[in-house]
Amino acid sequence: MNNSKIAYLGPEGTFTHQAALLFFGNDNKFIPVSRIKDVFSAIYSGQANYGVVPAENSTGGVIADTMDLFINTRLKVYDEIKISITQNLLSNIDKSEIKRIYSHPQSFAQCSGYLSSYFPDVELVETNSNTEAAIMAAKDKNGASIGPEMGAEMYSLQVLENEINDNKDNTTRFFIVSNICRNELRSKSVILFSVPNKFGALYYILKIFKDNTCNMTQIASRPAKTKNWDYVFIVEFENLTNEKKNKKMIEKIKRNTDFFDYLGTY
Amino acid sequence: MNNSKIAYLGPEGTFTHQAALLFFGNDNKFIPVSRIKDVFSAIYSGQANYGVVPAENSTGGVIADTMDLFINTRLKVYDEIKISITQNLLSNIDKSEIKRIYSHPQSFAQCSGYLSSYFPDVELVETNSNTEAAIMAAKDKNGASIGPEMGAEMYSLQVLENEINDNKDNTTRFFIVSNICRNELRSKSVILFSVPNKFGALYYILKIFKDNTCNMTQIASRPAKTKNWDYVFIVEFENLTNEKKNKKMIEKIKRNTDFFDYLGTY
Image (cartoon, rainbow over all chains, first blue to last red; front, side, top):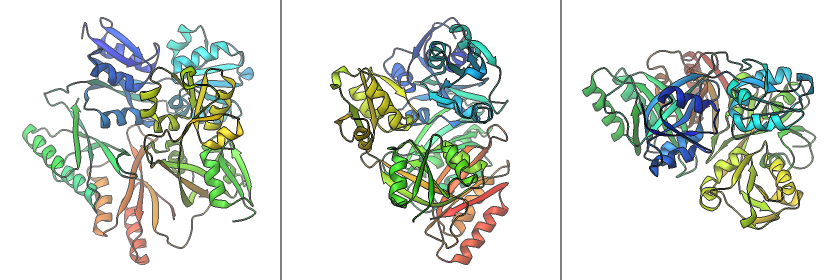
């Protein structure tokens, strides 16, 4: 894609920035914003045509902020992109001198085994981004940060240790956010719904998938916010090869829900 | 309860501290620790008999760290306690002078509507606890923090605005963690399980609940960590009044899962 305006969860040098560059290529205008909600606002306001936000990490799980924004807006998922996440320990001091490690909470979660083994008594300071963490580590004479190598280059830190994420197959899925989703059916679809607060309501939705021999690849839940302990479900499934049957199945699911939103296909 | 040693997610003055005091009363030894995992470790090591950790907030959703620790340890849920969470804006300066607001990410999530409306351009700085946020706000001449009133008293901050949480019915459930769960069946049970990676596996579990006219009150999922995009499910349900039938139902669920852990009843 060329000449698009793309808002992403910044600042420059984050994994989301990497994902945005990988998906769209360099010939576009990239707009770093500081919160996931600002990515959505940038699309609403017309400041951007597309947005890039983290959706789920293979270790840390779904990104709650992103799911909640899809629940509360009518924006769509245009596509997904998965990138392999390698976390590194960055600092200009020796490991033995480290008293504070800065990072984003998701990065801490992805390295929690490593941190417990090698830095059980070090203070962990949560930051809004890995880039911010690198900036703070560079300023702190007893500081280190966790994040991508890109951050080390940008803020003149050394990579003290490579690939400190516990799961070596650590992957994050990013969603490409847009006003519209694709028309042509691709391999998977993602939907949001809530079910009536009555006995067996979720069971009946899963039965529709089962009766259609449709494979659900993900199910997650988020608080509905309208009433305590009610939930909105996020379900991703493999589309049926028969497009007509797929449409019919989705219609049936919709009829059995209180709230329904077809987010997109990719 | 008296003369127990209770580890809780500290420091002093957090909502978890409030929950611990409310559940156990004052005549106990309370041990503040700095991470949720340290609560679990304190019980394993025998340093504490019980632990108190946040399990779910009605707006922010399940606390991923807590769920992951139950997945990765054999500790149990001894009980739950719900407390109403009132977030306040704390500072010693005028609202117009605020340039930075410090708080725990969960507190930010609970006040995100308020913050967008009244402080759209203010820097939000994530901290490890609301107590740490209050300490940092007290030191920053353009700082404020979000948290319980208890924090304002402890760190000599003024309450600039009361009850800034978006959902006025904002509630957090805390779990009382222990080596053992209760023997006698109480109103609800909570279980963890993963299903074989085959078509309809989750559907069959929900069918067991449905066939027993058993009401599920919560379902959430977390990454299984053994394999990317596999999940462990956390399900809370209302126990059947017939204890024998309830046991039989649980046995049947267990037989249809790959991994199963009965966490407790409360």
